Length: 104
Image 1 (tube, rainbow, N blue to C red):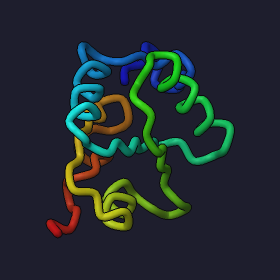
Image 2: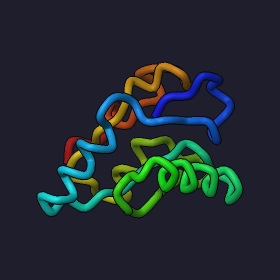
Image 3: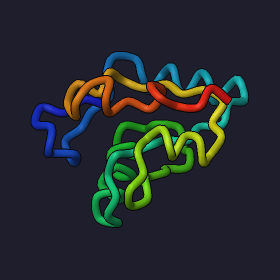
Image 4: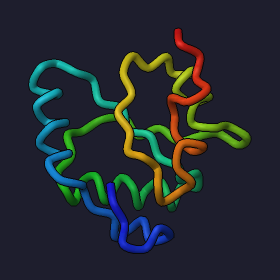
């Protein structure tokens, strides 16, 4: 997802062919789980609304608990594959899921 204004989650929009790629994975039987940096119920709902607005394939939307980083969420959920953007708008690699994650 991309935002013109990093603090304006309601106006996020998909990058390139992201929706089409995720739909293709769905058609191949992949389970989709979306992760968000948002934590409050209202913010998480905005993300759900954006996913629906742009017709992302349905999937569970997970968010971090207090004190958790993305890597903690991924490890807690034991995700097999993680596809993420470069997190440029929120701090780059330091805010990404895979750096520092347990390889299991």
